[in-house]
Image (cartoon, rainbow, N blue to C red; front, side, top):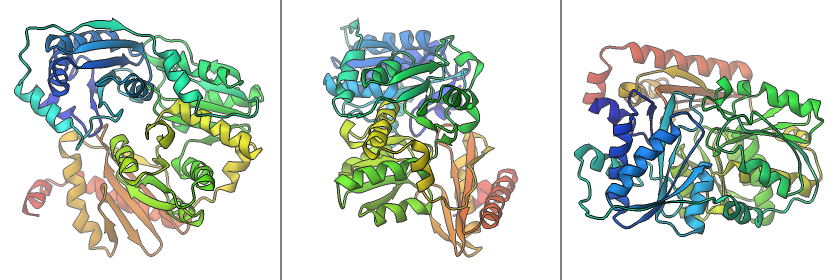
Length: 464
């Protein structure tokens, strides 16, 4: 059981399957560990997404928090980045969101938030939280903390809307995917003058039988609705509202950071010459070239919320993004708020006076493959990637080991990296031609699958 619990302490959050790794006793114990980490007498916000297991896990978590002397402000169902902004705006000491983000309904998790609004991830507190949890070294107190409820919708909307200027009335379709944005997102877009249609807004705890993700295969309804309603844009939100994808008026999907990072970066760099843009290692080589061509400073970084947001803070960057379409904005303290991202897109469209379709078409695209996930147990996935580094390098590739293996050759690159949220290894590639990209992708896939099956892998890594 301890091994299973250890595996759900991941780089960005604490995540597992409800009823298996994630139980009521686990949530209570985690609450004690988080309360000890933040400190007796601290006031923490707690929120959740719409999963069936959310309320029972939230209550167990709050019981653990208050038992070690923390006070809790219960926001109810509320998006992750929105909760983080409430922490900052109301000067709370931190928070926890009960969510497994885009994972399917049987999963759940816990996202701890520091007082600066950023996630307590690997390198930013997660190791200490896991240590307290494992050792059960909980604070001793005779004082039980309090629990209060707070409707923070207006405070959140006031904070983000004062930073947005939409100069045109847009017709928008919002796909809330049965998730945590189902109430606040329609209000936000209505307040800036949009004509709003909302789909998948029924809340049943199982995301209406769908995956609460914003990948292209998840959004046929949104594409259809945008075209049928002759909308200007469609916007989909994942379960906890930290990631958005867009659909143009022609029903075409735009959810890749390779496109959106370019669109947003250009807007920021028009107003901030020599500004810094942070993006992750998965992105196209085009992004770095584009940022530099627009007078910006391109900074490649590890994948993940805290890694991007903290690098933005260190570099005083104006914008950041990930290939997966997490988008980070300096105006809201470097957070990846998907509702703000959608509003900001409308601001850009109204400023340029062009439809999203035209902006998408204006962004060059290098031949590339989609990210492919290969099942690999959590216990060995990082070891598999580590053991592949010398093998890939021996083929003549130059290795960037910032996050997994990004291997550069004369005609393109391949990327192999272990997922920090799922028991998978992810592979993608880019080349001068489609054939080169496919060839590099196939090489990476074959290497990963062989390494997973290699019984001597662990010994090789130990020697290295």
